[in-house]
Amino acid sequence: MSEALFDPEHWPVFRVPAADGPGAVVVYRNLPGDYGIDYLLTHPGRSYAQQIASWEGDLSGTGLTWLELVRIADNPATEADGAEDPEARLLLVLPLLNDLDVPEAAPARLSAALASAGAPQDTAPNTAEHLLTHLMRGSRHDPTWDSPLSGN
Image (cartoon, rainbow, N blue to C red):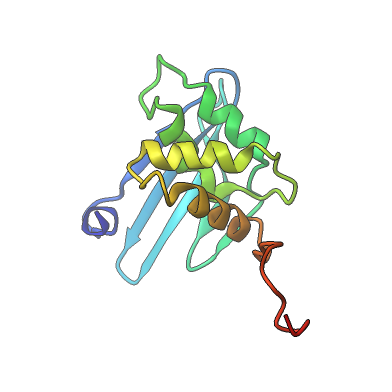
């Protein structure tokens, strides 16, 4: 898969159009020596896209809230070319998450999306938690873990 995504002869583009507002476009920019991923928002009625984030070793840009990601994932524009499966759509826009306060249902929703994409059922929940923690730039802590500082 990486050979296709990072082929300098091609620039893979994933379209995630939404029926009721802005959609997203993910562009793998494959310039020799200057690889990156650009995340664009498309707005109904506009002929241009707005870049909201890019990845060049680390994500930079404004990103989206969990609710904005879910709105895009759950509302495909069926008349436009692009991904229509809500789970696949959520995974495509997930790197745009910039929200420190995701709802309690977010890990379960992400776990279901991962399982739908082929992740093993037994590891999808932990993977979802890890991804959300990483994207929210927090540290992961299980309250059942003993602290090395407490002597337990």
